[in-house]
Image (cartoon, rainbow, N blue to C red; front, side, top):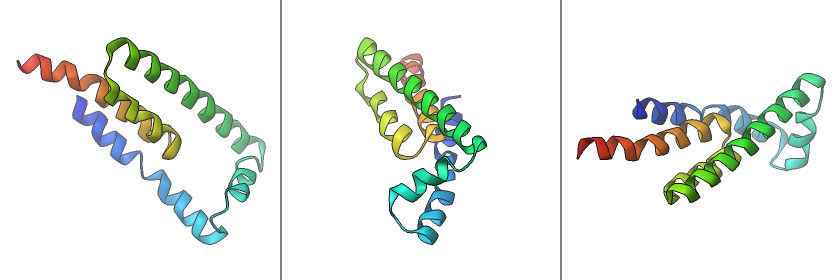
Length: 106
C-alpha cells in the first residue's frame, strides 16, 4: 500500500506542468499568478480550499513528526508548498507508512 502513495506523490507533480506552461506564457513573476488565482469565485474557492488543506496537513505533519521523532516526514512540507497538496499528502502518507512496513519485515 505504501508504494501506491509513493506513485500518487509522483503523479501529484503533474499539475505543475500546467503552472510551468502558464509561467512560460505569462512570465515568471508571482503577482500575475496570484491575480489569476482570484480571477473569479470558482478559482478563489479552490485557492482557499487548498490553502486550508495545506495548513491542516502541515500542522498534522509537524505534530506527528515531533511525537514520533521521525524527521523524514518533514520532507512533505516543502512538497506541500513547493509542489502542492496533490504531491505533499501522498508523500506524507508514504513516509508515515514506511516505518510500519520496515518493522513488519523484521
